[in-house]
Length: 160
Image (cartoon, rainbow, N blue to C red; front, side, top):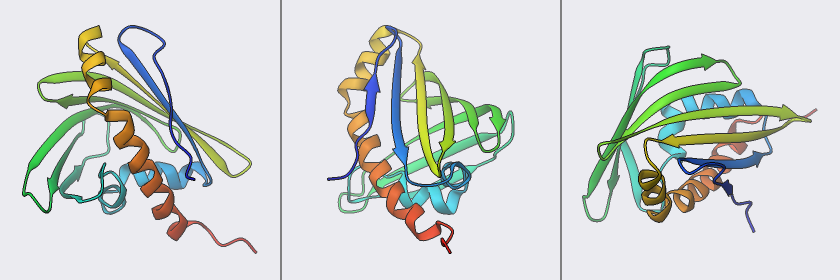
């Protein structure tokens, strides 16, 4: 059985998702910031692809993702702006989706070759947070992180 995400709601507008990866944080960071890697794992349920993955990784730079259900042709997207980048340990960014905006903080902490990822999403209102939770967002994150683990396996440094 694959590991899942740990989800907490420390405040009425926040969701914190945590997961441990068997990989160095530099690799986890790269998989969150390099378009050729992001489009391979950040897909949610099976059957979706990411035809648009634009990342301008600098403070004030924007990103844009568009997902497509390959069987149905359905598409949706999101975008945002980077506010803080500390390679390879922290990214703070604004995320815009369906007219809502949230402030996200991704923190990567490494110990013993394993990386704990913690992503805090702070929504504008408690209702926006509750709607995000009801949408299955954390299930999609769990599925995507399972896929991320497989992508990172291909890029891990060989152990002598």
